[in-house]
Amino acid sequence: MTRRICVTGASGQAGRAVVRDLREHGYDVAATDIVTRPGEDEALRADLTDYGQAVEAVSGADAVVHLANIPAPGLATPAATFNANMTMNFNVFHAAANLKLSRVVWASSETTLGLPFDVPPRYAPVDEDHYPVPTSTYALSKVASETVAGQIAQWSGIPFVALRFSNIMEPAWYAEFPSFWDDPLLRKWNLWGYIDQRDVAQSCRLALEADASAVGPASSFIIAAADTVMNRPSADLLAEVFPGVELTRDVGKFGTLLAIDRARQCLGFKPEHSWRDHIGG
Image (cartoon, rainbow, N blue to C red):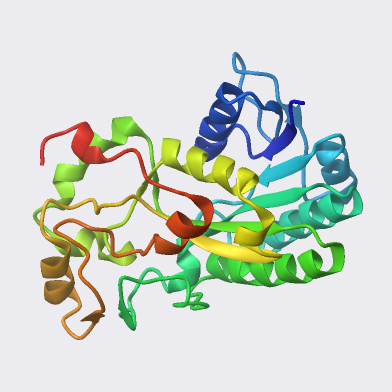
């Protein structure tokens, strides 16, 4: 039987990739967003800051992939960012629990880990335990939402899976990467991390499909590419820009400094896309 998945934020950068991937893998997708794009697949227009609209959006779905939020700091005032994200997240989480959906997969953020690292990380690669270190109201909205998700998961018995996405990239943007290479400070803010939008989609699908015993009642996973945006060894970058930060293990020549081990182990996540497949390094 085909599972019906509600995808919120379906017209966004991540949402478009997630909708496409789920449909390619045989899912029935109910797409929703506050903004709809002419000429694209029809999406239900819904303002998820309104609880009634959130209930209608997820009604009839087996599970939800919740991507709708103000997606970064600086796009709205700090208070507006926090209030909108918290309201949307609570409404979708509570609606999912009341409607007894089977799972909630949702977009948390790498910013919960201490970005933009004006204060250096305590160690690298940064993993899920380097949390919570919010430095903006955007990051705080994600930290608070992870707490809310954990409580509603306990009340409802529904697994909640938070995906702490790194900087999401479309393949066309890889042409800009050489502009970072001469100055490692340009991308130090997230330890030179990124994630291809197609691997965002993969991670959402895997989070939906993972055995409940693997994800637990409420869990969070860093989702990043297996490498960095740079053409220099990761250990050298860390030593130059963050000389006091310990590298706790070998990460290989260009390995990510945002640890994805837990996502590999629990979700079966394996990044399939790198900028190195598109441009020379």
